[in-house]
Image 1: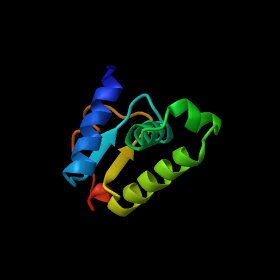
Image 2 (image 1 turned 90 degrees about the vertical axis):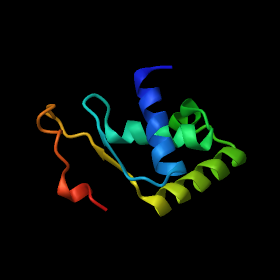
Image 3 (image 1 turned 60 degrees about the vertical axis):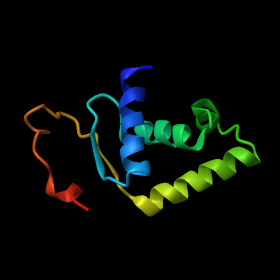
Length: 98
């Protein structure tokens, strides 16, 4: 298991199972890619199928259900701003507070 996969498993557990808000600071990966990984993981649909659009009816149903849950919870926040430094991301930022 890679570093990003492990971190996203922690995020998904906290956000989905424990209903905790989670803030992700990403220095390397854009927020769209992070959410695609998360959507694939939570819906149990292969990322390649999502990326290429090769989805069957069951895949669509899983993705739609997962999107509904994510939209309902709205507790995953991603900051993929360029130029983030450890000092710049160490303090909570007001816009992320639910």
